[in-house]
Image (cartoon, rainbow, N blue to C red; front, side, top):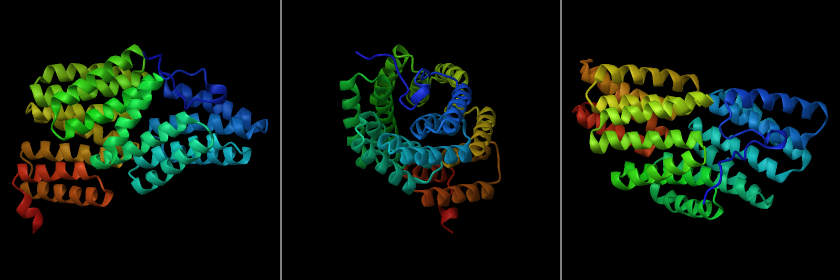
Length: 346
């Protein structure tokens, strides 16, 4: 049995905040409490409040502000000798590094966070940090290395009855099944995640699950309207919480659905919107995926063949450098789809 979802990253004076609190509100209240803690000389409290500030900035796409905030939280925690708070700050920094495409740094920070979380007796931080490592590997396409860790974390979350973490693990495993072609298994896992998230009032997890279900409906069942309806529901949840990154990925997925339905002009518009959103928050993985969708849409709408070849070749090089294996494979498939492999090789 799962309880109501909670947000362990909202700590200290901010524990009353909900997992569904608007990120704008989290940022405002977190900043106010952080300043109070700093003025009264309470570094441990400043570290805890600073964590919420860092996470709100990160999820709103304020990359530089998020970077400054997690580092300040870590310094305050170190001053206070609070090992668990240091671990949480490193978790935030590692998550930001992954979002920015700095995967080696993400591995290092999240590994340190897991170690300090265990040393500081914070089992939740340890779990979130291991989950961060698993997600980093999954995003890079290294499923063999992190598949078992996803399953382990899912089992732990189920035992603790922790809805939010269970939903995260289900969605990660579902995404790996979807990317390797097992659409039925992926759909069942996304469906379970959506049900748990809805019962636990986890809007963020629910929005991501609906996005996954929409993807499967579009790919497996060719149900364009059903997929678009699910994405509209997910978008409402994203907007209610100001989830900038999730909203951009929602728009990118809407572009995918429209592209598969051969509605190329509409798809182009959605990819352009998503690309603008990803660039505004400095999220290179999302930017690359939106560029890929846009290049394919423009090619279908009659773009010069040489321009398409050049764009896909540049994308391939970018993804090769960043270590995003699955996304690189997607570019290779696009090059094959448009018969551009030989031209790229030259």
